[in-house]
Image 1 (tube, helix red, strand yellow):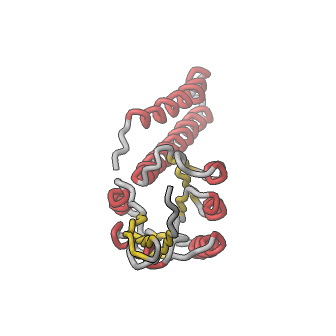
Image 2 (cartoon, one colour):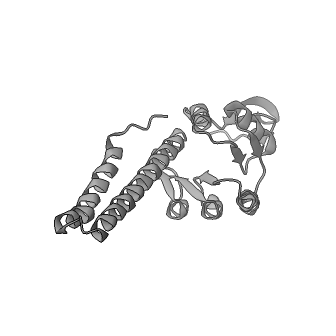
Image 3 (tube, rainbow, N blue to C red):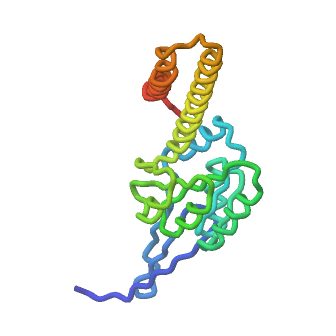
Length: 217
């Protein structure tokens, strides 16, 4: 087999792609392009979060600033920061959390994202390709690695929170009613049993309703 002196050079330029040029024996032989790809549902994920009322979407990346800004513009993201180390991401997340203007969620999949996931109010890990440390640290794990599922998780969380409050109000209202009835000698032992076991069953059946609800983005 003939031996060739092959020289490979790579040059970054604004955009998602990086061309790698190849020369053989000091003669230009061609090039190939290394490019990141936006996930198929990436744009839909951002639109779905907008519909859920998410006010600000920020992209934090270790990739170069031009690449990060290009991806953010394609996705319709509000703000983008590139060239970040893990500590830089932590500082930015800490700044958002310290503002106290709302819930801060951070989604990531790498081991370097674990500190930011832990620091945020809601940590989200991409489970299929994510590191074990990120998954163990996260509050929510997206098993399919589809960003659009984040909006689905928001819908499930809001619906669950609504049902929890419904059950709390139901339990306190019924128990308060039967306490008043008992104070006036109107409620008997059977009413007291209903106030205890009956309300508990009603709360369980109310919570079960969430299983039949669809959470499409």
